[in-house]
Amino acid sequence: MGGGGLALRSLNYTGFANPALWSDQEFTRLAVEARYRRVSAQNETGQTSQLSNGALQAVQFSFPLYAGKLGVGVGFRPYSRLEYRVQDDPQPVSPVADSATYQVRFEGEGGLQEVSGGLGYRFGETLAVGARAGAVFGILENQRATAFSTPRFSPTTISTRTRVSGFTGTAGALLSLGDVFRDGDALSAGATLTLPATLTGERTLTSGRGLEPDTLNIGSGAALEDEGSLRLPVEAALGLSYKPSNRWTVVADGRYEAWGSGSESTFETSLPGFEGLRDRFLASAGAEFLPAGTDRNATFFRRTAYRLGGYYEQSYVGARALPLDETTGGVSVLGATAGLSLPTPLYGTRIDVGFEAGTRGATSGAPVRDLFYGVSLGVNLGERWFQRRKLR
Image (cartoon, rainbow, N blue to C red):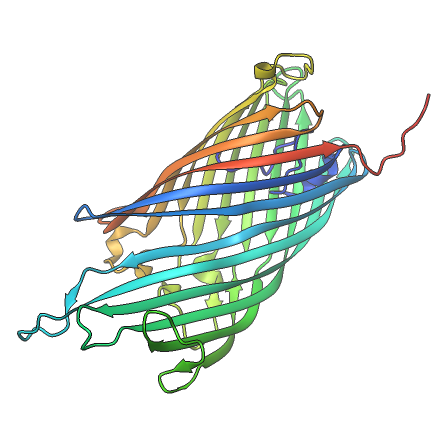
């Protein structure tokens, strides 16, 4: 549903976007999700390139300590993903009557991961609050390789490897109201605030001849090691969810991340484009239709939930981070999502299939625009664990 869900209350899922949602749990749940994405990039001359990747999207475990009032959630998710491959056109080594050319290839891979856990507590029917703490860690690798058309010149590779780790925390709140516009409807508003985090670690710069970097040497000496830190900015998000009936759910979310003013690096060997970051905004909306509502005896297709949504993102990549003039306005993303939530013979367990497509690039004058599409598969297991059964 556009990727939102800060205020989405559901007995079929445990919402990890807002720790306050953990207070609503009735079942012990284990959720696993994986995603495949393919990106097709095209430059201003019509040349295209493709890049595909698949990754584990999330592993989440949650259970109620006091059903419908106090719940626990722990999870693992990718915090960020670095994956690109760009290759320049061949250029002459010398403009003076020399047929030799060279070509530069830029590659990046890795990312940050987050392991988090926390509690959600409900005060009556109206207000719920929650908090979670997380450890963020990972490795970012950037590589620049230069190849030549003649053996008279040796290919060279320069690689930068950054390993960092740190801690962060998020607080959330959820306001729930009933019978707002009509009898039986439900309106919820959720908000979260994630504190700035400082990730400390080391960055290693290596260089060598050949297309594979020599991790022991830079030039003829030892690898250049640099200790420092990266600062992740404050994040704030707000979401709304409205259920006019038990068949329909509509959500809308907004997120703000202060990358332009709240992020910084103390590493001496800075990464290209880090100074060109700007604040990130994300707006999303979507809807879910469940024909059967709460009828457990309905047919399979009536118990299947159908979802549709979209989102717009002003990414943190600003114009100064691109090899363009500042009139381009930086990189933005526009995407659409759709999905199915399939019922299973096990009550409380569902299988989710999601689809995504969109475009990414500068708002004007973009040398490269990406067209991406992907599919995701998730399994959400629900069972009544850790609860003492009573005989009447």
